Image 1: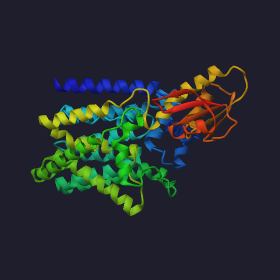
Image 2: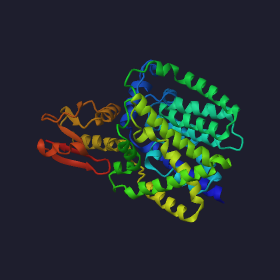
Image 3: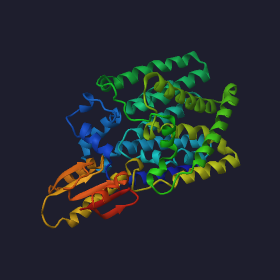
Image 4: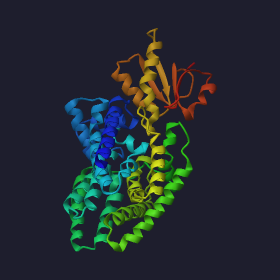
Length: 429
């Protein structure tokens, strides 16, 4: 019965992600990736490196777009494949621990966004999650682990931290000389996948992240606030911290009892944190921020899942997970919520465009990217300019995100529409 409930839940959630992939507007990062790699000179991803390049995901997206054409749904098919991989791993882990693990490992808006949005984080997480499933098996298949972790890093470079930590945890836990053979294939395949793209990397290419630990934590814990619905309760973070402390205690308790799952999960999380700190202080790399720390939304619930076998922790965890899950929205991707307003904005402008005169738009950055794409797609050539952050007289329409709302009274503008959920207003002189 339990496996049927888990499978039904994950199937329903996958269907939800398919709906999102098919109906949500493009995001800024997706259009940037399309212009830079997918729709650019063939195989430009082998010649130019940018943090936007998620190598295997970008390559898969390039191939599927060339085969099926360019649309929101087609562009997101590799991410949906990642969703299938990840949910398959979640099913295995929930069967091993508790059915509640399926909820804990999926109930976060940031994580669910990347199960469909056209970026590489979700696919990389799918490979990593399967590597963990193989790692805690009764007889770990070393070749499979090495290949899966290499594919994870090749899909998204940020997964270098948890992948390295998982291998180190396995070696520490098993103390088996044979496990050292795992590192050779992993390093070799990873180097092969990344050799060409990283050979084009310039200093400062890894620019996305947080400068301080509090900002990094806030981007993960308070992510639902980007939906501008309700403030995310700090008590949820405090509760998670207490429960994580219990999980770490369990780690030390089971360290010498050869409890593979308890040790590998908590050791991987601990070593990942250490790797992140070392990269920051040793090489000046930014801390993970939101999507670049997506693996923490897998590792932390992974450590907490065994606690749900007891009634009181299960109630607390389920309540917290349901609360966090309530922020998932079908019509916006939280980090790019403002882009969801673009199709409606252009429809409003088109309905008001009756004179045939050219139209100029000033828009909050980076909304000009997606506005420009849909202008071209819809053949709205009479929109002659879409300028980012040009807050001065002379434009016909002003598209403003929340941080620029103060420009409305400063320029004497009249508000004509407000998408509250996306946090975008349109104003005219």
